[in-house]
Length: 327
Image 1 (cartoon, rainbow, N blue to C red):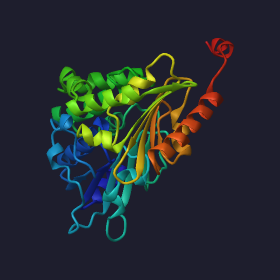
Image 2: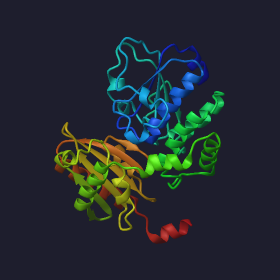
Image 3: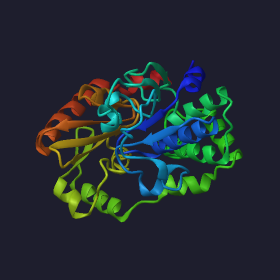
Image 4: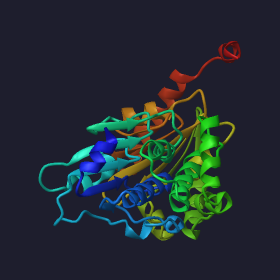
């Protein structure tokens, strides 16, 4: 079905989510390279600029921040987007009838918004799904495509260290390395390198973090973001640090934006589930990593989130005896 859809398409639009991470950019560029390999025209779009540390990826410089209004797209491939809203203005402002949509994603909260939905919540990244798809479509895993796919895999698994990594995930990584992707280089670029502004915002957040009833969180004002020239919509890893604190069941970072909204990042460890919290607040993601956007002041958003997290922690907590019985 997907192969037939690709073959008959004349102008393909590939979109990934706002504030892209390594899986988003890796998926976007991998699909772009694959379309080029089979002789199809594809426009790569993301509302936000590709982060500097992912600009090593082939075709990253081809990613546009908006669609070409003079082109009628008859096929849209959405990668790593849990719902239509994650595609941002690029999708919302498409003129004329919306194109046929292939939705390729791994988020458990995916709304299945596509005409074709290739959604596998057991996959650790969207690039892991793409690797399987490319094999089914007889697309050659070139060194360039392997580099893109491995970037997504490394980013979303934190270097094969997250819950959900399977033997198949490791085999996929090995295959991509065998195809020419440099594991050490990708790990350095995707996980280790950070801008100075990131370290500054981490310091701000850690100086303000609070722990209460299993929730460790930090709220960062728009003024504090601007003071260190921090432009990302996410905490770029700060929320992971908070969730890794032994006394915390969940970690959260709230960031006040320019448009009277607050971006929220959530992380946790089993048996807790932050996707449940994020979904209830209009967002989505994975059980152990999710997020949402709240409208209102930072103080209002903090009150809503803290209450929701405390309720979820109380509901999801299991007695030690019960956990031991499951072993």
